[in-house]
Amino acid sequence: MLIYEAIQHGRKCLAAANVASPLLDAQVLLGHCLGLDRMALLLKRDQHVPDEPWHLYCQLIDRRANFEPVAYLVGNREFCGLVFQLSPATLIPRPDSETLVEAVLAAIADHEAPLRVLDLGTGSGCLLLSLLAVLPKATGVGLDISEDALSMAKTNAKRLGLANRASFKQSEWTAALDPKAAPFDVVLSNPPYISHDDLVQLMPDVRCHEPMRALDGGPDGLDAYRAIIEQIPPFLSPDGLLAFELGAGQAPMVGALLQAAFGQPPSIHKDLAGHDRVVLFRKALRS
Image: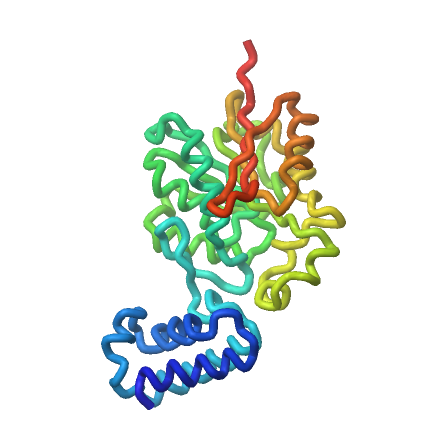
């Protein structure tokens, strides 16, 4: 079997299963099995696929045809220019979440400051570690209720050379934090924000394979926002920044929760598609 024939075989199998991007997925999976990027696949399209990579490729195509996400099949995903290892215990990082990182960085006046950063529901650690990669003197804590997710976050921190500035603890939101410890200058979260009724409408790749605990936001999708906003005041510095990723249509409701809790309006930031994606709240200094 030649490389171009293997790609067409995979494309046909995935198209028959109604996978959304059959050609791209076939190319990524074959490239993973051969250790080649997509450009190299094109340049070597007439080369033979050895037996071992071919059998692995066929297994991955079968799993993808059952809607297992490509990121889990290859074990990683690029986010903010960094490559993060993943497992089914971690939500797959998406470009929408890069808007959260970019908005936080834009709101920080001094990137050389020794900031303390808290990431609630850290998962793979992609948000926290992407920030630390740009903020050379910052340190951070990532909290997650899943031990398996924390293990992956620690692996990513070590791989990216950030383990000396990032620590991870098992916690349901802020439960494991010491309120007597130094507060955080930046608190961010991409919490579960899908409502119960909307979970069944998710793509099968997400609904059947990604961790439900990282998706299910309760009856109206706002349970996690309420919990964090209630718990966070003791842990936020006097001029601290609180940042959330938002689900579709949630900006007014999350904004109202922040206004009610702190008496100040937050700012809303849009993603590249023009959707309200991030809410930022800056705690005002008391005179």
